[in-house]
Length: 449
Image 1 (cartoon, helix red, strand yellow):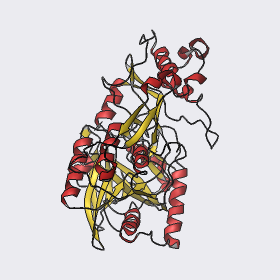
Image 2 (cartoon, one colour):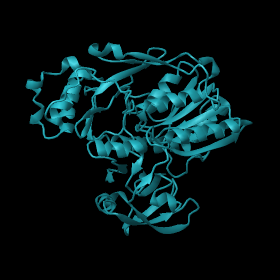
Image 3 (cartoon, rainbow, N blue to C red):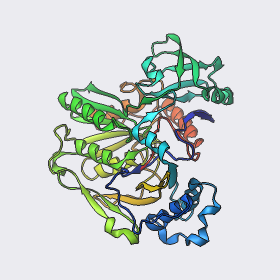
Image 4 (cartoon, helix red, strand yellow):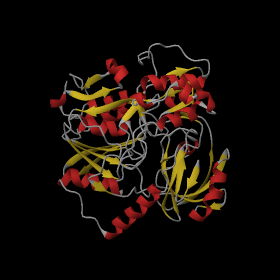
């Protein structure tokens, strides 16, 4: 964990950009032909890029590129990114292709973690808050909640002036944290680093307002061995409560497996979308045989909510599979976004085995039923609002949730007050300060689309 500028960031694995979406590493993953790997893992990594990279026609020959001149497989993939086209900001479209040790990726993909199990964020210059907590972590088991204020870590005052010292403290195996809980009570807890299973569904509840039952789900990652079961439980609960509309909170969700995005889409869409096109996969010219269409299930799940409206809460950390979910729903129901513009990752990868590494060259791009998928600059919000980390998940008074519920109950977003606008402006400055490679705001353990 490190604090950058005014924001405490979570770096789950060095060298990876955790804001992506991918198909599962499994026996169903397509395999380029021929499948002969090179003698050096760096050559193997580059070989797969030459085969399946979306812009493989721009890559030089093996001898010209000379993969073994790079220190690591990740360095090879970082260089591969520079051959992608330039986008509107005059930067390469590909910010994500990577290579990772298998043992490291297997831990991330399964949701097994060995950290403190919570995230931090400054709500103001001297107001550090808990942004999320995983239930089975040391912090979660002691009852720590989103919104708690951090007064100090290892006796170091939690102020922006002490960023370097706070970072140093967070590198240890345990920390002593003085909290102020949501009711204002002061408490001191020892939080330990350790292995635990993440819970991708952070919260689910029903908000009743103006005679409507509005479902709320905070979903943190499209990765983790419990994600599918967690989603089943959450949607079954909302179905049993007869909710008619939904707020789906992806503000920290950096993506993960595409099949989970498909699952959620099938749980949300109106019955009129059954059997219709969800999205299309496209690949480079050498692998057009891999192109496919994915439809909504012809018989939607029993817990399908048959929604006509859904509001997503998003931020610059909402990426990849999170964005795909939003994009595939737009042709079929009213979709609104509250928060800030999403990260912008409309493409994904497959995992290819390269000795003791997995190689993930950007290889597949998705478009929705309206043939739209070029959101490299992110999906814009309908209502810009600050991430109110002073309140817990599902709190109807949290700024983003309040605005979402207001829209769902009245058909309009509330007027923006000067105070909210100023707070949001400050929040956006914090977001702009953290556009650092390999780092994402908030709880993003996920990666890959």
